Length: 156
Image (cartoon, rainbow, N blue to C red; front, top):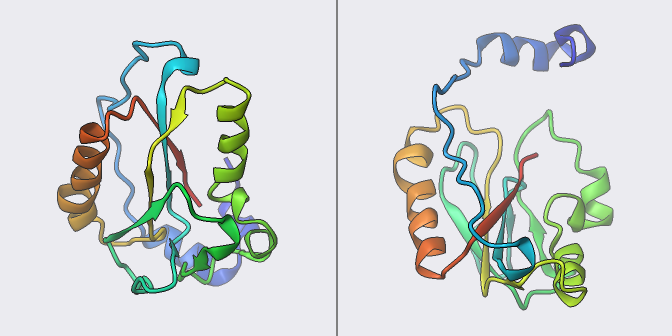
């Protein structure tokens, strides 16, 4: 774990005030199928959105649906955090949303298939109650309805 002293003053101030949560149980579920038979969806907290979708606001607990057919160059960066270094993601969105890499895994037969849609959330949410109680469970229900076996989360 990184020392708080390696962060800038604003980030240290924020991290000292931010209340983290510890959970006694894990929502992880063991795979019931080999990965090469699984339907996979991607979820990112990079705040990506598409032309025509509303950008994320600060502390926004909503999500954006990203169709599997999208070209990663079409993703718009909407992350709002002073602590978020987006220089690499500006060059290659796959760093935070590895859709092109997962398409390669699908072609190689390493995963069964990609879901028809994926999801993007805003990271750096300081008041996550609506995320925990509303938007994340809603996305979970949609993924379950789609028959998704594995959700790959790329937090930023």
